[in-house]
Length: 612
Ligand code: AHR
Image (tube, rainbow, N blue to C red; front, side):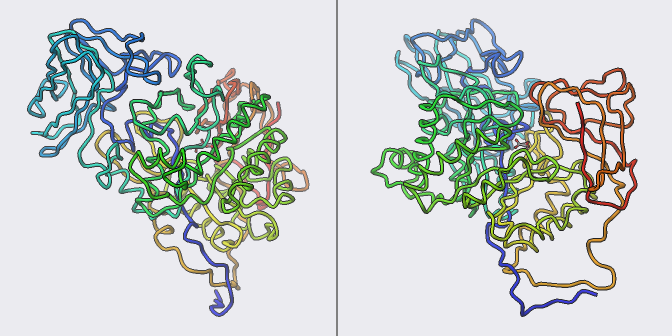
């Protein structure tokens, strides 16, 4: 029997209760949400970005075609360009460039030529079927100039190839093809079907750009003093301004990121879907298994200044340095930034905390109106880690970011997680969660868990499932909410479940009690057991699952020469089969091994531990 107390004051639900977390993982940006159809448009792909990449990745050529990096370059941030006498053809993403009959596609190219060098621009399938009437653009002078043309598709195909040909020598860069129909018709905009699916969730916030994406590589800025580093951390200033001046970069997830989808576009998209923008800045402590913190105070101060400049970019007047940049990109009105997160899954808590306090001091002094999100550490089994929570509480931190990817059983067994959270401590931002695997039962476990989030809406202020997007041909992480190839997209059952909750957020919780059964009966552990690690270069041996009193529910010699039913479900690093068992030997790891239902126990408050 469920008794409702409609007159009692349950916690209010905020508009930002549920949101989305967009990270460029699984090729979510280039070839995904970012509508650009040409891959490696600026010839900047490089072996540093990913093994096998070259300046001509995704391109085929005839005649003479050479990628060069010399003083004739387009600009200092777009260093490679193509010298061509012949043709160059781009294969796009997945099976090719997707076009729809009757729709228009905007072609553009930066070019310079000694004399006249007319360019033939054609769109055909891989098999040579014409997809649009060719257009011609005519570079004439020896100065970089942008030339444009429009292709109208005469047929529908997901296998298009864009070819640019010149009989005379010409230099080309930033070869681009965009559908005219982007989300809300924005220039340099977003792929409509994907943006529509995200918008249909009615997200209260958009967390971006990562995730581990913000925690990688050199923390120094892109400049000559640092030899234009390619594998550098995600720094927002690299991602704004004209697209041809955004230096591409290695992506944490192992591919090139063009930054065509950058901070301006994230703010614009958030505004377009009525969501609060929530940027995540690197804290100069690289979490995500990398264990590095800067020891350069000047560099830290530079990043703190970048945080202040970001607030100016989002909210400052058009007369301010960064407000002016925003206005020049087409948005004189402020974006209304209210909340900023510092760091992601930081596993050097002391170093992280020291840096967080410096960000906090500077931001709160200049902008007391901005709320800050801190970290809870690598909270991989849903337990608190080190003493970051205690520090956050003593500090009066606004919000603390928690992440967990666990079995469906864990989500069912931990429905009451927030019932006992300290009401006088910081509020919770559940920035990433998902139950492992992608079955309907997972979505039900997540739904059950979300009732616990809502019941505790006075503590859990925001929550976002993760990851959001996955290109079926380039998957680094599963499960994901929305899947796509180059012309189709579809939501998982978890997407549908999120949509049910997100589009039906109430005003407040109606307190209820249950008699004659109870809603949170401890259930046997019969689901999968997940082992998630955040350590480096480790070889794991015994795996144990214990009760709170320390007695063993289950034990397995993890590396005993038998696979024993363990399987890797999130292979980011490398789980190697060691004589039939498994050993984790990768240096950057956050992998999860799952073992199917082998444990039965009625104590749901268990701890899983792997020893080295
Ligand atoms: O959502 C995928 C990854 O999971 C995120 O990048 C990271 O924060 C977490 O480990």
